[in-house]
Amino acid sequence: MADAVKEKRKVSEELFDSAPPVTIDGTREPIVVVDDLHIIYRVYGAGGKGNAASAFSRVLRREHRPTMKEVHAIRGLSFVAYKGDAIGVIGTNGSGKSTLLKAIAGLLPPESGGVYTAGQPSLLGVNAALMNDLTGERNIVLGCLAMGMSPDEVKAKYDEIVKFAGLKEGFIQLPMRAYSSGMGSRLRFAIAASKSHDVLLIDEALATGDAKFRRKSAKKIDELREEAGAVFLVAHQLDSIKEMCNRVLWIDEGTLVMDGDTDTVVDAYSEATAK
Amino acid sequence: MNGHPSLAEFATGFGLKQSAARPPLGSYIRQLWQRRHFIWAFASAKNIAMYTESRLGQVWQVLTPLLNAAVYYLIFGLLLNTSRGLPHNTFIPFLVTGVFLFTFTQRSVNSGAKSVGDNLSLIRALHFPRATLPLAYTIIELQQLLVSMVVLFLIVLGFGEPLTLNWLLLVPVLLMQLLFNVGISLALARIGAFNRDIQQLLPFLLRTWLYFSGIIYSLSGLMKSSKIHHHPWIGHILEANPAYVYVELSRLSLLGSYRTYVHQKLNEPTMHLWWYGVAWAVVMFLVGFWFFFRAEERYGRG
Image (cartoon, rainbow over all chains, first blue to last red):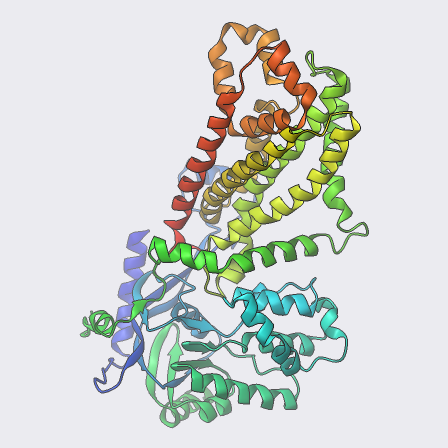
């Protein structure tokens, strides 16, 4: 088991050698430091014959579960983010962007290496805490409490959230399963964006809804960015990255391909993916 | 490594902290206390959401324990007649009290074991002390218990038990049981998070526990009547079982006729049960909390 990890690390370190070395800018205050980070997911229930006899013989032979697969999602990433940075993270599907954000938020424990942060980084997303069977009203309270607000803060923010979500009259008293997907995501975004964060992590697909709401949410994200020490944005639309970020990380297969100012990296990325 | 071994030192030099590190115990408890409103809101929300699909809705909170008690009465009261000398009018309240209170512990254990695994998406999306989850699941069960308590009181009164000041003793008994349940559900939450097989095993363990705990028969009656009364140590072991302790203490508080039966007819002391109850609650809570806390940073890796 441990050997397997070492083996994988060796491979990734070879890959890593081709990646740009990390340079430290001594004049700026760091807010997130990612040091040779490795993240391995364990996924159960993949493959295997799936009958009792084969499972039993496996137990007898003291083999590991074939149904457990390890996914080495981040393979030795290092970089330093400074106060005031707005960093875009780009890469193809499955390159490890979302995993990186979760690791920065401290939600996925690293296999080795580490993530060091000043303050508490938080993902912009409370979807998981909300329940479809509950009314919008109750979900607002639940979501805000889940993000760590006190009941008084929830009360203070409540009207603002309802107004921002802009639901049709009466819908706030209906269970969320009765909402259209657009309404649901608007309410979720409104709840998520109601709290200010030290380090803000924004995963893609947040800017859903109609054009009017997209503009509204882009403005809201701008506001949040001004309050936060640093922002990470994962997005596939390179336009929104160009618009909002001063620096971009290009990730592929869990390693860093390029780290630099927005135009340089986005141009290189567009050129590479256009092939 | 790779020519920049100082990155971690550089980070700590600026006072940055590991984001996935386990906080010290003191601040962990403080964070947990800050989340108390979330724990209660989460539990209430789950309770509401649980029955939204069924037509009877929240009525099932009452119906489920009632039906359970009815089944046990049918089998153990009528068919097998396990009342062992208990007067008939006492046996039904005796049985129902036992089933309701054991269900509280049983369900806390079951849902505790699932509390981390069922909420991986929540764990992977938000930052909060993970002990919130098993705690919230125990609160769900507490809320359900409080509903079934009303039913229990009606049944007990209906069978002619008097309403006395002794009923107030139920409050400390339930508090001890709650503390015990929180502890055991925290412990199982950690076991269940890393070893899903436990969920297949738990039903058998819990059923065995049920049959050993004198829920559907009177343990003192069993010790008096059958062959094992030559081996009193068996009785001492069975008596120290936490499920038995809490169930028996609630029966002694609620059921006047049972109290008279135990104290006067069987001539048994019951004071030591209180000490067992306190000890189990405190030890299980502390051990469970510590055990869960030790793996705090590893939940969510799957």
